[in-house]
Length: 237
Ligand code: F6R
Image 1 (cartoon, rainbow, N blue to C red):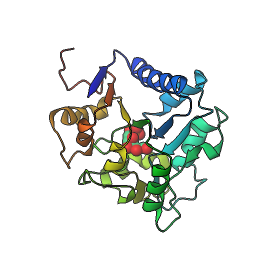
Image 2: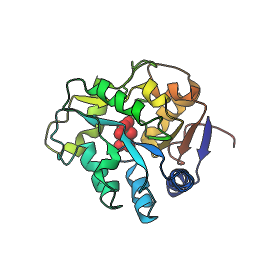
Image 3: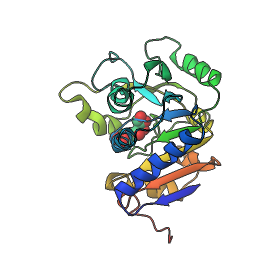
């Protein structure tokens, strides 16, 4: 596990965009797993600003809410169109979205992931409760893409995206084992609200109550922290 403890949030964001840009510059047809959420917004803004060359890349979304029309403004599909696809003029055929309308959605997504070969770089955020993707506490290390129930904590954290509307109770998420199949993992955590989860992550291993701890067994896991997210740890580096 490699930890990049940045001196500012801007540096943390640049560290992540540099990893992605280096990857696509050396391997233009890389397969990249995309996360959504507030943490990733400045990452995508910077990739757009730097005109990242993703023309030959292929993308997999990490997760999606169940039960929303695909053009719902709070769907992750709409998020990635707004933040990355449209600004960079990428083609929708370059990205796989979790097939939330299919009955065998999980199996189908796993099949197309296998057909595409391994994900080269999987981008990840972290929930305040240690979730990754929507693998909530209690998820197993062997889990694959499936429909998951969102915890009340996660629903509360994301309710603001839905205004007065009801926040979904379920999502389709790549599983832990699916995420661990990627060749490399890059997690970005910014802000004080992530400090407890990061402290827990660094002090525990393979702990189902904090699914992010499963990532520590991956041989190429990079954790990028801003000063607030790192404020409860002491790495002495
Ligand atoms: C989003 C996702 C989630 C978020 C996490 C943090 O695709 O998979 O795991 O990364 O909930 O969300 P933010 O960045 O909004 O704090």
